[in-house]
Image (cartoon, rainbow, N blue to C red; front, side):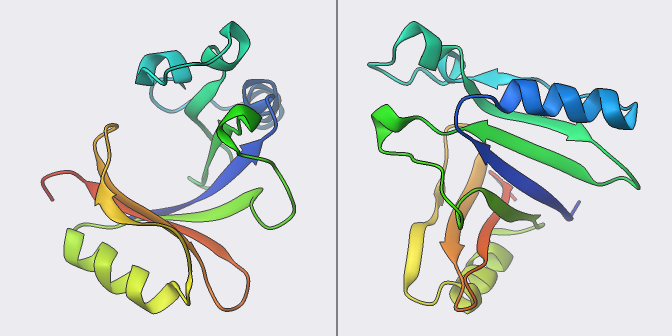
Length: 140
């Protein structure tokens, strides 16, 4: 099922922020909270390993905010331009490839590829300076 959500990057306080939004909107978290330790990322401090790899909270009208903590030890630094992303989940690999080709105007962070968390996933910056993630479940 295709859906569009907003993906937020935080400098270490994703869980605090999404907990605040959950309380503010009177909603619930969506799915499991994944921490970096769950993904087996090597060489992290205890604080980094406990950081948020991915979590989601419903807000209003069915819209979902997704979030992660950026880890400076992995070269990830939050700045205007990478703090908010439009996340488009589609129904096929072909649609991921088509959208990525139309959006990635020479500034790609990750071309479409199979990911360990179960998605065929990509991320790029379009010619208007908007950051996009495009994904589909593996096997779609």
